[in-house]
Image (tube, rainbow, N blue to C red):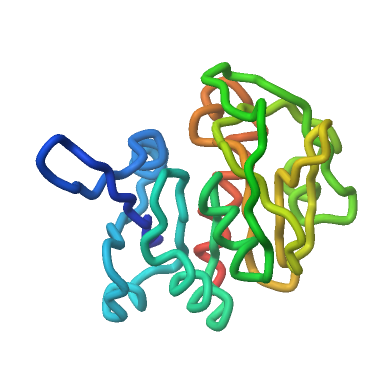
Length: 197
């Protein structure tokens, strides 16, 4: 059984800060019968138990850079979603700036064009997909390969194809997989890569 570490995010209640998961990510992993480890702090004993990592979206970064460094050095599978993709891009020299018109709760918001030479293209088998969008910042000037752009030239996916699986996407496949087979392909490909040791 694969063991996947999912980084938690901090949310604020009236009286406390609490650690939260993205329920849709957790539901997907449960349905795939994988073991899930919550990553709240950089506990190396827990990190070493993981076959792969998911950096989810959210409002606060926690241990993203440490997880990216570990996954990169030890070639562990890594999927960044929304803020998680931005963290990967920043780790490789990128910058975040504000972007208008990229936040919507709609299932499909805009078109994304995928580089045919990318690993993302190999997984999805298409150059053109429709995705959701829930972010207020965009990534620019990163040194990692950019594998997809939106129609208004916002970076929508990044990757290092020399690694077993190191992909970040700006959209939320965990909110699309029940509607879109391509979202399921991406998440399933990540899980399968965690077996490849």
